[in-house]
Image (tube, rainbow, N blue to C red; front, side):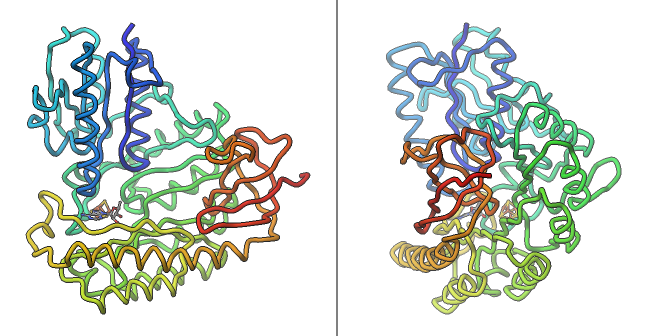
Length: 435
Ligand code: 5AD
Ligand code: SF4
């Protein structure tokens, strides 16, 4: 019996891939363990999107190298860094025994038949969609299921390593998406999150149906109470998506729409394919049909050449749109990208200052937005006791905000009605009321 442990860095796409890795290893006879120290095989699923993500990986690998001195252990690196760095990761320096890119997880069962000392590397791209049978996915959550609809990205934003780490876009056939959604609904999942680096470029390989069609079809599958999707690209975000969202009540009124910068000049250098005005038009279109829609975004500060004036425009965009949540980062150059050739001329201290300013402003905005929620009754999908507040239950509302609430009866997977009684910048508090 081979015991395995998976550590995941990065985004939802990686979490979803780790569930697939866990399923494939279990299907081949492996057994998952909760503690790194108990494992015979450690798989590290990696993120390459920022310099910091790679730094965290190397310090984690150092920790495992120490463990490896004490017991026989096979260490694998998979995911984005595996794809980018490939064979250079393998060997005694880092203690890595196998490396698999995102298209090569079907090779994992090799671990079980091969001798302990065998090392292998697979980072070949496949051109077709590679199917994992729904039964072969070990999902972490009991309430919400990730379902991948596309992989890769053709956009080549100048700062972004994803097209190199995840390859060109590949779309999952629509019937296969529907089959997996039906499968998770039958297993009792209440929420489905459709995943892809760039979901609105989805195109069914058979019929050419676009993302709005896919969204409608998925929303019609019996038993899915809440449906979300990410990530959308502001360029070519079709108005049809807005209409489907308005018509289908089980699609959560929430969209993640990365802005990156509020300055058209910086957006141009980032090769985002839209201007500040075009982005704001997409927001106006969404809010025109769905006034209470919750919008979240990603922001990069300190891109090469970003002036104080450019940066002010990002702050101004945050004030105009009033996002319900943002993820903000300091720019870091990534290998193979076009921006890596630009002079990274915003000093680190200045990047830090800009990041703190963005986060400070956003905190104020979120406090103001959350204050307005007090007194409202919101539908919350309960995910179990809170991690920091075990005396309260924790869940998410339709806007995907964390809601911690007092309840006598709710359990994981229940929809409950919560009256909001308090708030912080990053979560709401409340109490369950009788349905
Ligand atoms: N530096 C900083 N942030 C980056 N992101 C992508 N590449 C970089 C980079 N080189 C951010 C973007 C993207 C999010 C997933 O990570 O905001 O939307
Ligand atoms: Fe990266 Fe741009 Fe593709 Fe997003 S759209 S994954 S930022 S290249």
